[in-house]
Image (cartoon, rainbow, N blue to C red; front, side):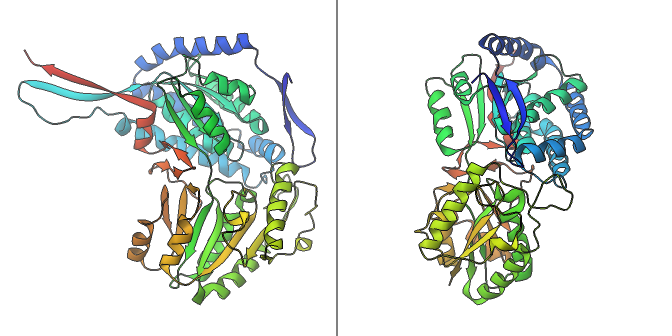
Length: 461
């Protein structure tokens, strides 16, 4: 197929269609990137700061248009679309402000007769392969710090949100960024995988599935380049006996169902201490019934369709399988009029009487379904939280900070939350373990992955 189509989950229509880049264009883009990087790396940090700040301003100016595009592209309710743009800009501005510290030369200490230091050197051309679920937030994690560090960027966005790449380009062009410093390509996944092996690419940042992450890693195996992989999660939460149950239920339902559950750090499994289990379940069900599933272009909707009918079919099948294995669904799909088998619209669901013998508790769902298990102790909760192929985030709800820290230290995860979930703090590194991937973005540590150290060891005359 020579074109890339965005099929809207709203009604199955073709929302956007773009031609795939021809080999000649791909070659020209990479050559332009290599040429532009030499000059861009020589620019001052102050100049990069001004231009990236203008990018933020330009992007914000199109929030309402972008919100409607996101609704048609991937089902995000229009009321929530501007929030992603604001979050993208806030994250970008934080990374702009963190660049001075993240890129500062390091002094290993005094040595008489010598001057020694380590500077951070940009890698070159950074190839960003971004997903559809949080299309601005996931892309900006690498795009802005890469450019601030003196690299240039080529962005390939998912077909579902291909217009997001154009919005990035539009904002950078409006900011006056020099030609070639940021470019985007509409290309197929196989073409992107092949580009990983191109000698002009110095770093690859991929966000997506485990299977494709392994393919990207293999494609880079014969080259000595760095690869950042964020590959998903099956993120757990634990509600201790001393937790504020009402607060925990409200936050965990939001963490499970916001963006229709399509978040790598969304809550997909919850472990609740037996002494507060019944109270938690009652409150979680009540909170879930407040959602309004429907057309995401309508202002009253706060739960849109999942990204496609195919995705919805997978989620339904996983849920139905768990029920045949003994789980119970506490939410009646009939309570959500828009739920329609065969469509991308499906009601949220809370599963109880679940076990780790069910795919719903071990396999990434990426939809508005969460399983809840009763536990009798912290030890049991930790064992179950660690019983996963993934390790992105883990949330603990408790009044005891010390106990939560001790539990968190035992969990195999990239981020430990207390009394919150499903959130990225740009001041902290975003990272994971196991099949969640490798590498890290955001914070001052995020610049380490986008630069290399160059040591100076100078004997003074």
